Amino acid sequence: YFPVYYVEPKIPNAAALGFDLASEASRGNALRRAAETGLQTSSGPIVLVQSASGGMGFVVVNPVYSRTGDLATQGGRPAGLEGFVTGVFLVSELVDYAFLEQRPEWMGITLRDETEPNHPVILFSRRAEAPLMTSLSYTSEFQIAGRTWGLRFVPSQSRVREMRTSSPWYILAAGLLM
Image (cartoon, rainbow, N blue to C red; front, side, top):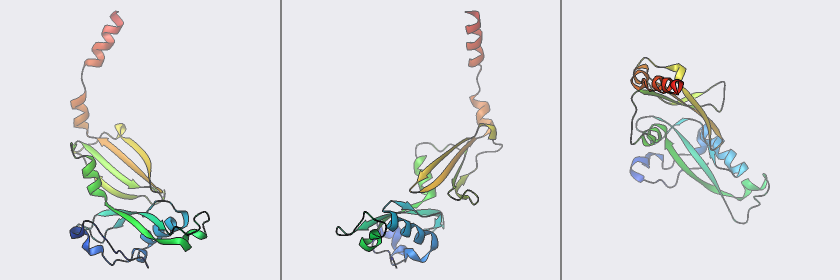
């Protein structure tokens, strides 16, 4: 039983007060992994209790141990466990913050949790103006507190057309004349 005792800021997060983090499988698994390994761990994709929009989110868990606990062994860590410090993130807010200065409407963005390769979960998706130039997509895979995420960018065909210039041909011609 791991209830939420403190939240900050209080106003948007008040609904989470008293919620048992171990009552849901993904959150509970993250708590267990963090307690056993002593490492920062992330839940899988979840709907946040305090999210009015019902948006996709995740919880990052950091275990807190007593100073007298035996942290050197996996068996000793749970005995010294005092609790957890967690960070709660709404994926759409993270993406909005990442594109704070510029919101490229011509770029399709997909963020997926790919920890289970046979069951990837879309965390965020924004379609660009159609049609897309899938042959010019860029995909990157990275780790978030023990989970594997994939990020894919796909430009629209109209944006690619806008960016095309004759400069490469002029440079080639000048190089051949030299």
